[in-house]
Length: 175
Figure 1 (tube, rainbow, N blue to C red):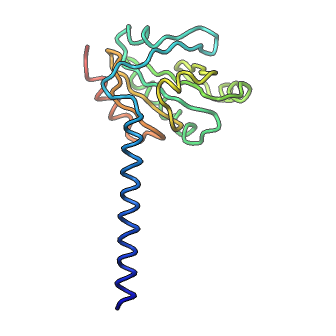
Figure 2 (tube, one colour; figure 1 turned 135 degrees about the horizontal axis):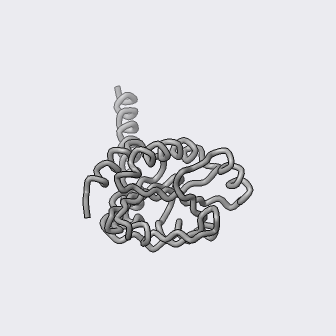
Figure 3 (cartoon, rainbow, N blue to C red; figure 1 turned 45 degrees about the vertical axis):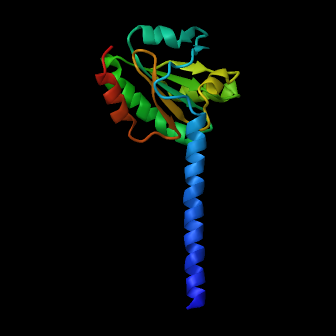
């Protein structure tokens, strides 16, 4: 009986410790994230043709924006990109812009990937990782929803299941 009680106490301790650690990590992550409702950091990055794409110019067209930070070596990114492409095709005529910000260090891998995967939205290159730092990217993919006024509405660290519902709500908001 004493051993059983000791085992139960030990299990309870482990469960409480695990829950506490998860909560502390969540709070740390939330404290480090960009505040929702704040103006999105400025962004000006080259696309595949070397043209500079500016976030403020896209928002200035009264577009809601999905930013996704991705890399070719990231398996969840490779899963998410086709879903983003489908979402973009469905919603672009409703005022949705999508900017895919590549964080690869190897330009050859990116070129090969883009030859095999034509993306209908701008792919931007963050060679110095300044944009990732400004958006406090901690995981790939990271997806940021920005409203038509340029404010951050939602940030998804990692694969963002349910993104379409968030985008639908974002598009319903009018400036």
